[in-house]
Image (tube, rainbow, N blue to C red; front, side, top):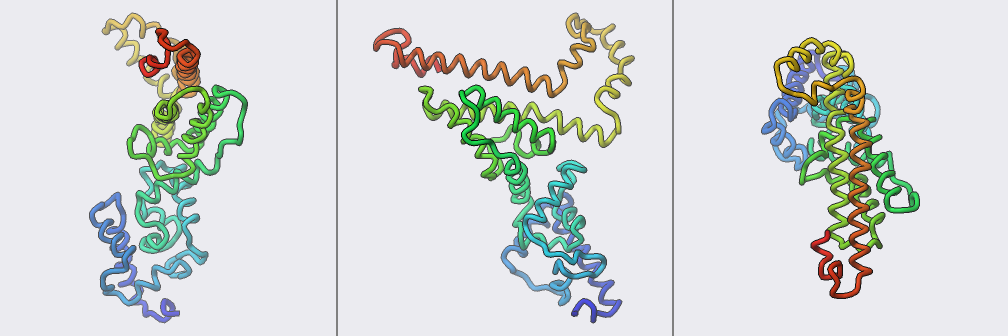
Length: 309
């Protein structure tokens, strides 16, 4: 009712004020300004110069096409995921999500405290949509392979996820992502490995998958920008490739043909690397078993187990 009673002049002035607020809150445009806005949104601190600001931020407002539906955290996260699927994770900002929802940007901070929290929620949601089965197939290798293929399928569906989780020592706070690590460690439990080694194997598998999936994200971005597939891009560069091979001493690379091109596809690199990695885990488990079975004092006895690891 307050929105409806405002004069046209107030509406225009308020619109300009909200655009300015959106610009400040957008982390892509000005990270420091977003931090200031975020602090006010979370703490409620600060004096508002515009008495109509509360009304404009209400999601049920219909001014300038604002959404009439209820706003909540799941809706915000789902909108951010759809935006990332369509335009890439770089396109996701608090301001852009607000625009997609048709609400004022400060409305989002009632449900999501920061862009970092939004990233965490996005990752947790997509992993939560693909839970690993309990108890899963028999055997540690079948379990680890299943978990790897499920995570790879997730990266195929949402290539942008690898940008948020790959090659970092500060992974998202996402219980559904952590569940994959826990599931892999349980698959290895009971095979005479110490806890730290099981942690390393589980993280190694996740790190491999995330780094192997990075080309999927880059390919999706390149396809959006150029509207060409990887094969079309390669075909268009054949002349340049041949000129390079004629001038450079690359005896092995010069043999690169259709079969090698297919072998270098991300899907095939993933499958090849996964099997070699599981072969390595099998060797480690064999060594741990031999060390546990050997008589005390033998070269593969318990006192050598840490070296064999």
